[in-house]
Image 1: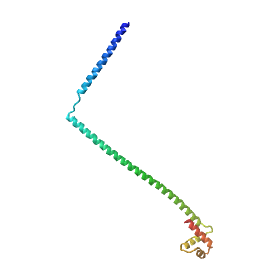
Image 2: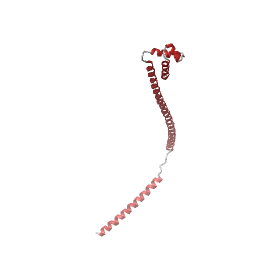
Image 3: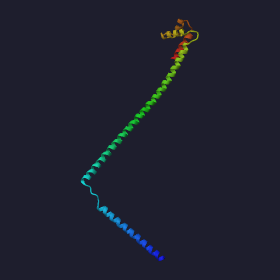
Image 4: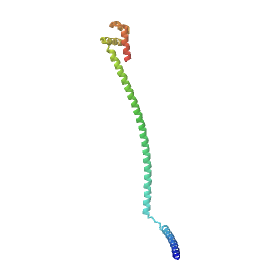
Length: 164
């Protein structure tokens, strides 16, 4: 039995060596065939390859120009966005100022309304005081003309100054 195993082992190693030798020979032959048989291009094929190369170069140039154009447009959009943000902020500030002025004006109107609504029915006296003051008369002269105390006339004029 041992002798059969020795024969099989010897045969197996011989087969392996033979297989490796055949693989090496096939690889060498394949390398020679590929080296010797390089494909040759016809002049027509060479022209085609050259024109395709030019097309690729032109496409690359167009691509570079397009990318540069896109970058410029992106910068412009960023500048426009920044300006719009500034304008929005200015608009918000203006709205806040208008709201403040509106509140102040409403408060002044309330003061004027309350100063005109004097108890005792002297609203016409207030109007007379204000009309005479607009003509340039001082508090003493106004008090003499409408026959009211000077303090009352001064109070009416003071309220009017506060309201305006």
